[in-house]
Image (tube, rainbow, N blue to C red; front, top):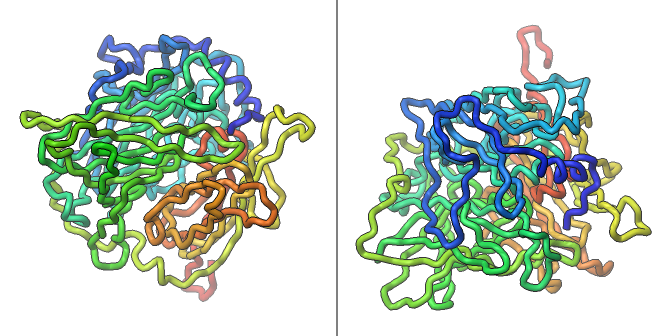
Length: 559
């Protein structure tokens, strides 16, 4: 459970309630910022923007408002009022995002960025700063691409991202969200996030050809009136495509499916702190979910065959930031109750209360018209060599051990703030700071095996930017009630859960073993962290530096 320790985490919640809605500098609409749907609404796909002729150019205004329950909301809006649209691209496309920060600066906080590293955008961070992380995509960690350590966009400023997607980017579901350290949790809980789809998955997994696609963004937010979590009161409320499933009524959204049809569901857990364990029940019977992709990578697609494998499951545990794409058949006519739920997730004695909830009731009808945003784009591009092929058999160049840990700032006071750490075994635990040097240095072309332990009494979620990793093993002591992620061994992810330790010194720490692929073109400094953003904001992040591989020069020496 998050116990703030950094100054930002203490000040920002107060400042948020002082902010007032702003109108985009380039607005062409009177639509109020960050609109939300009523409880019980039908969940439609988010608005979509699609690349043409190798290019997608988007203008975003970063906006804020306060809802009727006093929650501060955030979002990215286009000039015509589209909120957090889905961005559809193809491998090799160029994406240009011009983002204007229209969140007012309260003037209550200003912090200089690292003096020994070049600033990207503003050279100071304020209470209203923003940037964008393109989560899961294999992009360069340089300024104006997917750099989050120094990139800062302040009130009234416009900043341009220009990104070219690799030709071997796996087709699948990714997402974007703010990543200002110390403020990421508030921005993402406020709702500032959207999906990115790299189209063409049907070329790797023909089973989805012709299916309607349904994009579902699960987000979390503060429980109104801040009741103490416990029992049926969750630590955080959930929303589905901006439809609240809120305490105390937990009114589900509605999903309408054509009778007798199958759909490709693309689900992103865009929560800041909430874990979900997804399941579809027809008359309380768990249904088969045919998984075709996890964290943007088609399942089983990296063996050189240019084909993915279907992975059958009756539930899918998604850590914060995790994504799953699966085929679901509509309920037969005899089914009386069809629900899309998250099961209870045990997060440990110090963890959040992630309760069971019905996210949506599923209805069927013969006369449903297909949502135009749900028709998959026809892609002419043929499959090419996949990005991570043969990583499972690649020579390993280094092995490392890391661990998550927590320490109260005042051990004599159990209510004192908590410091959160991710540490290379043998090093001193250090809170993240943008001025920190790299905790790990490796070389382009390396293949590394990391074992990551959880030495705390709550779950943590490991995420690394710029690359994916291959899941080699999950080593969990299951008798404490913790849950591992089924069907992910041998798959490629960018985020993975490490369940909590039960505190018994006779029991081993839960851990995962992953293989990281640094064979791609990306070099420079980027980060790895716990993707429970309250933990990341309070120190649980570190920098890795990838240096260029040596090149043999004409003079006969390495450089």
